[in-house]
Length: 413
Image (tube, rainbow, N blue to C red; front, side):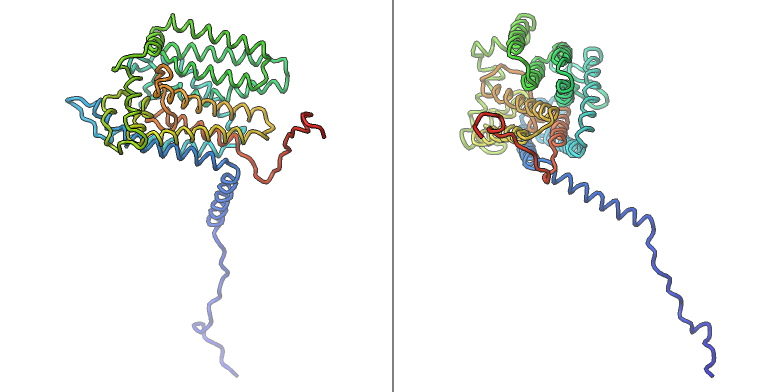
């Protein structure tokens, strides 16, 4: 007989590998994140995202070009700012803005709507605090110092478009609801709070967005005429009651002088010709106030040329057209109104800023969206784009019915 094996010669028993629960959960989370990212990437408007990122990239280069002029202008004997002072800070604000944009774009449509409404209430309350505890800069009290300078009107812009679209969409539930009166009262409150700062340019922008939304929601022609008449009366009253606006309008209509900001901006814009003088080779920008904010378009013209200025205009136009095309087969009224309001806001602000730099519009103290230097403005604009991407998200595999001319009765079947 074979003697029994010793204990030392017995092979060890192999126990089966059981993965830890934490590893399985972590793997599932990673897979869920990849899945969520894939869904987000398929549903958002990637063309719109690329247009926005292109404008922000141009903005970084433009702030780098204009930073030396503003840094030297604001330097004192006690404090000397580095030539790239504003460029470095702008990159930080752009990074924060990109985080806000991508975070907002991942929200479901209903969550984005609720977030916009809550942000609107918060910023209107903040606007009420500005006349009381606001910080005065260049003769205007528009900022709250909360450790970081905050401009409530900038964050109110995207929230306002979403909130007004939400109220106007109530007409589908009950056509008798006074939605125009409600939105008009909110707009009047915002206008009064802005004029107390004073900020006539933003007031014009808010009223313009409200008019576009009301017009799109189906306001009768008679009421449209009344709204236009009230707008004309408001502009006339502002001219006689608001000294700053009267001086700017008089300067614009009178042609100005060689020392006016708008005239300096126009001369700087034309100094570079078609191809520009080259990065950091411009000289007229050194005499231009607010070269990195309100008049950055003129700096772009001097250093990069009128061709790049034309490209920027085309990018803004492409952005607006892209959103409108995406809305052509949209069925939800809130989505149409909110996306149109956000786009009208961004496009209208760009339009006004460019006209001011071309000496075709009175000076408004308004930045060039996604390009000009700014903290509150950069983050708020990126947040608005994030809301726009969230609201216009669409499943590419769902085919929607299109309304044709035959369906509308325009062409015979």
